[in-house]
Image 1 (cartoon, one colour):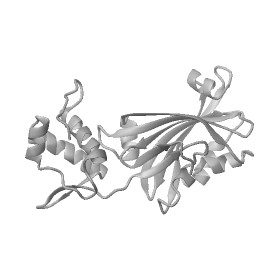
Image 2 (image 1 turned 135 degrees about the horizontal axis):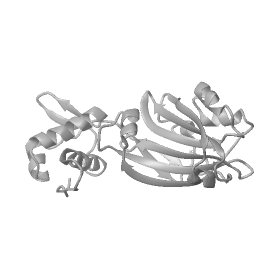
Image 3 (image 1 turned 45 degrees about the horizontal axis):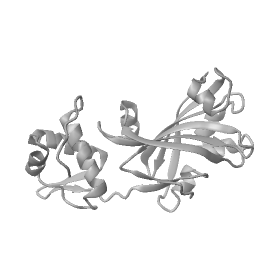
Length: 243
């Protein structure tokens, strides 16, 4: 773990939590014990109350666990490997890693497409699109929240179909889309928004991996434009790997 570099406007406990999260990826193995609170406080140049707040947040997320009289340990939670390639699918991408998966429709709206969306879908400015907000879980644990936009004229009623199937692939098949491919994917990391903290069961300061993608049909016509937010401590994105 590195010495804390204080960032203006970000609570100290959140900065400590970020450093501990980073150590999960680089320094610690499953079931390793975290250094004592006093040692962490000295290392980061903060008081023990600040360290305790950071650890409490990470316990809430399930990254750490406290054992009475023994200390705080890194949970044995292997991150899921999710391939991002030309045939990205949530279900097949996690095949062999989980027992069950589910998709839940959070909301459906018909709106005028923002410029970013109309450009991605190759639609005239201001076209009507369907905006779907969904939540995907693996073995009962939420791993990604997503927003998808589709042409309202082409996919009228797709929200109800998704609600019944829990799968975008299955829903698209109802419209005669038997296959599709990923045209492009951009990836970035950022702190989770308050909405995503709630949806994914994370604590303030948690990191999400954000993908922005365009899927096309067999005639190379854009099908959907999507933004997915993955809990970084639960999912590892494998760029360029098809399931």
